[in-house]
Length: 522
Ligand code: G4P
Image (cartoon, rainbow, N blue to C red; front, top):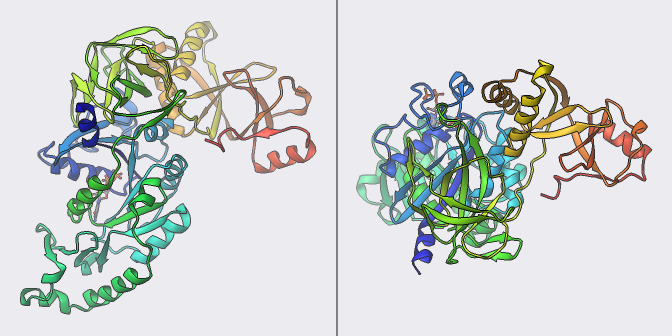
């Protein structure tokens, strides 16, 4: 009973957006509403450098970006909110994708002046594939942006999802007057630097609002709204929860304007922790016994200790510090005593946690990404985390051959951690690593140098298209640099094609060979 109540309170989500769309600003405003921080400007500290959850990495400081996803939690109304931050930089890594496996919904921020941008599409596709409900916040309405209808059309077309505007903006930029809140049937008035005000629809005709109501932009928008009511899609929470429809909110994170309306509606509609798939069927969050899975491992959060922290999503039961659990992969019993909870600006010891919560557990080099931890005797494992298609490939060697032992050790551990993906050229063995973004290589190089004391040489072989072969033996003479034959960690053969043309050419010539795109089905 107690667990069920806690589950009902949890809302765990990620914010996804293209860099500069306003993720940091919106997160700050949400934290302000949750009274978690006193003033805005402390979340990422682009300039002040205050937010130091992951300041172990110099790259992060140098480039002013949040490389590693962090987690924040705060109470809001009757809820307990968990926000998982996803790196907002262009060259994000697989961590970004994996974070999406640990949330129950996402908020997608779109910059009204730019519309949908490349990175949003990539992350969005992963959400769509996994059926994660998506809520859209169209930001920067205080600036001259694209027409709202054009923005909705673009979302529908590019992302292939139905849209339902929860509110509708009146003007934009200098002419921005506010929004019609279609959900709560009120007009939210934009007062520039002053706080927004709320006018219920049936009070709009009162004398004091005549200036507003007589305004030409307001009147035009009223007509637009009628059209939308008649011709637009109907709102369906069921479709939203299936990931087929996205509620759209317009506002300005900076002002802030429309943030409260957005968040109040979002938090009521966003799903609570759902049952999750395991090898033994669905596991309900209300289940008595604790269970969860590890979606991320981060090394060296504290440079003075060489510690590793595994990020675990609680999926069922109650976590209590010091409890004993078993690791599904090995059956080994582990006592969870060193645990952390992530708050906006610090890491505190966590004593208990419930489904939807994210905890950090000390990792004595025992865990792997995707590992399941369970209390009690039952045996099951949460669905394997999908691997994401690496796009960039590089050959890697140790600068100094005398260091080959450390080189191999570092490589092995970082691959196990999921920092990069490893392939071996065949038959002439050489290591090739694959990554989703360039940043992963920088992190890899940095960690090899600092944690394993090895200088490495990376030689790019460019973007590649990986296709697996369904055979145990292959004729190595069919392959060359354009269609490079390699083995993955499990020893399966795959070909790294130089481009689409090389792939088609090969397929035409060898029709009998089956080429498998392992990532298509994820
Ligand atoms: P990100 O985390 O998604 O990368 O974006 P961030 O919040 O850092 O915002 C990027 C820029 O856009 C910032 O300006 C921020 O002030 C601005 N911004 C965010 N929301 C709004 C909005 O609703 N309206 C307007 N007009 N601007 C907005 P900057 O000059 O790059 O940085 P800063 O000096 O303000 O920190």
